[in-house]
Amino acid sequence: ARCVILTTGVSYRALQADGIDAFAGTGVFYGAARTEAAAMQGRDVILVGGGNSAGQAAVFFADYARSVTILIRGASLSTSMSRYLIDELDRKPNVHLRAGGEIARCTGSERLERVTIRNRADGSLDDVDAHAVFIFIGADAITDWLPKEVVRDERGYVCTGRDVGDAMPGA
Image 1 (cartoon, one colour):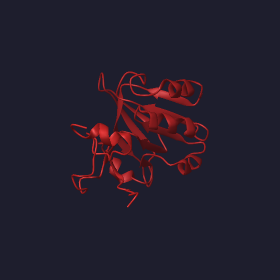
Image 2 (cartoon, rainbow, N blue to C red):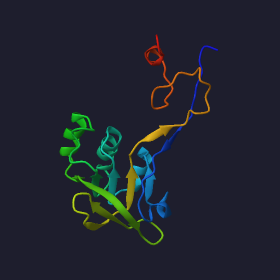
Image 3 (tube, rainbow, N blue to C red):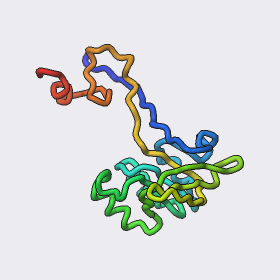
Image 4 (cartoon, helix red, strand yellow):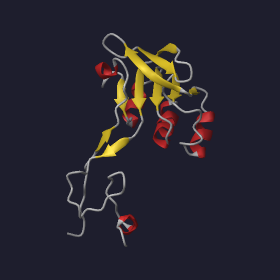
């Protein structure tokens, strides 16, 4: 064969918080498709994670949502997000950064309605309205089933092109 296409998918890293599993698909989502943005028209959205994927989603959601809060555990985005995205987010008046926090609890009746955010520095809790939480805390490759001859990087992702030689010992 000249080409092999692998669509192994990923396993999203799960966020641990009281009540979060009850709202999977009804307010809590892993990753975000562009099709979700229009459904957030006039709503309050929280994006968890400080990488480029979260930044790109925040830029897009900002055109629809009333407010977009980027929630990160660290002190700033500068160590995890590209400068051009940080600058773009700064130009969006409805995008806010909430640093040093983590989701402790999710509540609501049939859908997500509120999120409790824990301040990592002092442990204080803050309840905030949230119609949706989109989680961008990483994903793991599902490639354990592949034979050892298929070259993968240290995180398990299949290498292609020039990366194959770089990942092979002694190459």
